[in-house]
Length: 164
Image 1 (tube, helix red, strand yellow):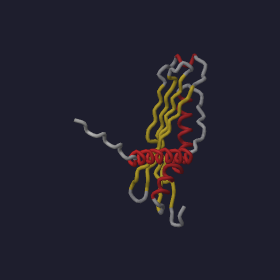
Image 2 (cartoon, helix red, strand yellow):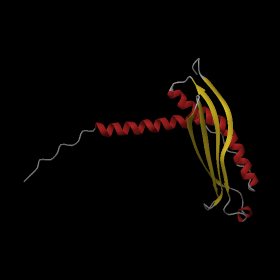
Image 3 (cartoon, one colour):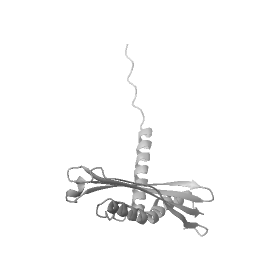
Image 4 (cartoon, one colour):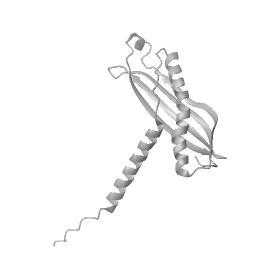
């Protein structure tokens, strides 16, 4: 970070959490071998005084071998971060990578706790590489921009002569 840069977590909070087990209690009679789908999103919102609210949203959808939903857990873990002295590109990287890295262990704990309280084994979510996800998103964005630019650069075909 730059010499005059400042970064710190000021507050950590659970913004939203939900648990669904639509097939309870019948689901508990089945062997627990779920197919787990994990969706992760994050977003940052500027607050006054160089502060940013970063929200990490994780949705876990567990299905049995036949595709029936066993459970759905959604957690929005948030933090207020003080970030100053950085150029916009570095600020975006910090709020998209470092902040979610700080928030994710709390998401993992909340997801496991909710699963166990719902009568299921802990899900033990694997760590997430937010740097890699951010770099992949940048590559996809650049590829879309390149494709749009190449479409704009293609000259229109010559119009056929008008015949009477």
